[in-house]
Amino acid sequence: MTATTNELVYAPATELVARIRSAELSPVELMDAVLERVAEVEPSLHAFITLDEERARQGARDAEQAVAEGRDLGPLHGIPVSIKDLFATAGLRTTWGSKFFEHHVPDFDVVAVERLRAAGAVIIGKTNTPHFGHKDMSDNLVAEASRNPWDLSRTAGGSSGGAAAAVAAGMGPIALGSDGAGSIRIPAALCGVYGVKPSAGRVPFWPNRDYWGARSHIGPMARTVRDAALMLSVMAGPDRRDPLSIDNAPEDYVAACDGDLTGLRVAWTPDFGLDRVGVDPEVRAATEAAAHRFSELGCAVEEVDPGWDDPSEWHRTLFRAGIVGSFGERAREHPEWIDDSMAALMEAGRDITMTQLVQAQGQRSVFYDQARTFMDGYDILLSPTMTSGAWPYDGQPGDIGGRPVQAVPGGRWPLMFPANALGWPAASVPCGFTSDGLPIGLQIMTPWHADALCLTASAAFEASRPWAAARPDL
Image (cartoon, rainbow, N blue to C red):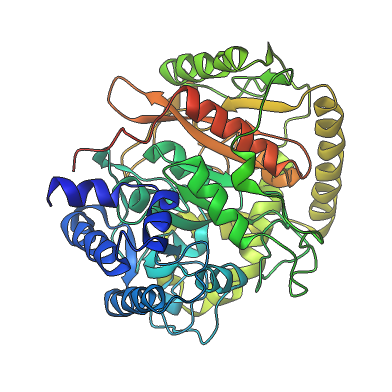
């Protein structure tokens, strides 16, 4: 790959679309460069389950013709995008990382994909994810496990691990992910890219096996905050097919990237005040330094203990019950098609009683009130995203920060799922590297419906500590 091509595949989408609109850059040239990069690094990364090279090239040719004919162009016109393989894509294989759907080709798009296509984005393929997105690593029985671009012996994270690896490696500037308990933010942190989980309902989630649970949210992954904001602006907005979609017009998220943080109150916590949470010393040092950078941005930063109850037990109940309720019957048909980690979740989920499930739902409501009351005193809550750097793709850490890691939901990602339970916006911004050269992420969480503020805080931090120039050596 030439130096010019390398710069092209790492250019931000906002720059690329401007160059396409001005006819300075051909969508075909861009797609050729991205697919050349895919051919170069995908064999070692396994970021994709399915590539759609032929239709991607045709989409680029169609985009080029639209420019030549002076047609109206969408905000993502000609921009290559990858789609997590948990989302249905018309005419393009969608496996959900599952042997049950290994050859499944839907005849419709999910809402987010509909809107990306309408905005002019060109799909290059479906990114790797664990079986039905159930864990924080992207391995399954359909494809090879995704590797981390910064160290091929490490995991890319999950469940949007393929998406994060693709973006980090220059296989497209933007990717579509989802986040049910950290699945955008986990791989974003481990792969050194930006990912934001918007408010519940900000991006309509149709079809969805559980509209009312509202814990899984769709969001963008990118190398810059502004690219993610542009992508979010395209996908956000109400849709009657999702009964909990937010019924108002989205804000100007790109403009929010130029916002000011002066005078805002920022809470920093290394562990949410939970004794069971261990944080790697290097991760704690990097994220604490990043948190205090907000003082230089005009904020009042305070280390805090949020004082809320430990949400792990009731979250575990909801998580396990959701897995077994959604997939348990199918697992009985072909138990050999269920990997060990998902089988363990199902086994534990079958023991949950209706009373325990109802109590867990009630405890989630109590948690919301506790968190809301705490955030009445602050505008932004900061923490580490992950408590360690990436671990081996075929294993797991035994302990983090001197505390054993439990092989249970949330064991490796204890700071992730609160934002899902609350329905609040949360992002992961790159903030440094471990001594082994593994990326570290800072989590930025903002209160109810404060998506624009989450982007403002993310962009302000990025401006003070730019990260996009750091690239893995592949």
